[in-house]
Image (cartoon, rainbow, N blue to C red; front, side, top):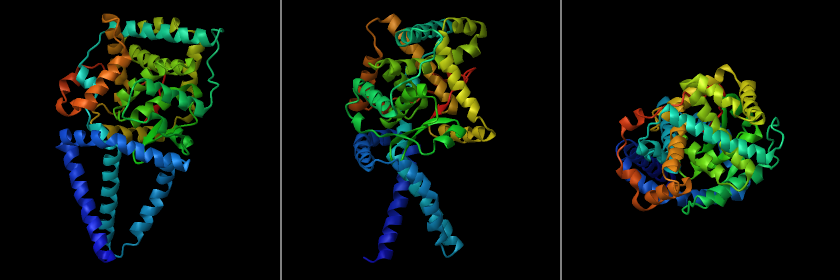
Length: 398
């Protein structure tokens, strides 16, 4: 078989795969979830082994060289028709790789929709008090001086290792957590101007952290991205799983970072619901904790620019086209999960978040319930939506 025939076979195969991806994404989500769940953990192990072996940020380098390679490939087109054909092949190759590598995680039924939980102002207030008590206790254990903000002393690598240890406690037995690759992004300054604190590369399954963000945000951001790596595509779920993993860490600094981001989301929701109640809660928080929150706010102000809104609108469109109907606002849906988690503990003292997550994972692994539960739009409409950021603007982890 000559080179031309091999090329044609490859092109036909690529088009066939693309058609299958389109079908499963839009019409066959039940089947795609079953198939994807079957091979995803193995794919993560293979790709993580390769990326760890090379010791560099493969994903960022891939993004850097992709556009020149595409330009070179398209520039070899001799006619306009051939140019359009090559452009088509390039687009469907990237699209297919995205969904086959990681994107089909979006087809899973989000926990928030299956819970169908609606909270009231009293439950929001109680949960906020709970997290204020937790983080005040964290702060007292770490710093005797009430007015001092926490400065994490651990290195990036140490924080990553501690976050991974927490995920191992959550019993994701299908994944080799230690092999998951977490990098500092080469594009950290660009990410800062875009308003992103981190992102997962869907092609290499690498977690990339914006190294410019305040160190206090490292643990919560790293854990958010690890949650994406193990298959939680929904942003509110990645927030929720990340926070829970921080809470069960044996490292107090990791606990603090997770409780801080949880408190920020709760305060932001409370600010829009009842400003007077919000003001009362602020008075209960130790001054050093408020300084950590202010540190995050100052970081966002430093890099705020007109183009950030453009990037976020693009990302909002991307999320809405991948089964997250609330777009960027879906980050705030973590409030529902945090309140449901706390209220469940009150009603059942033996209830624990770890047990809850283990039960969900057992369902995923053995019964594939993602595939058999229908998505109920009414359930989503009953959820109170956090209005994004409130008085303390939050950087987004993609």
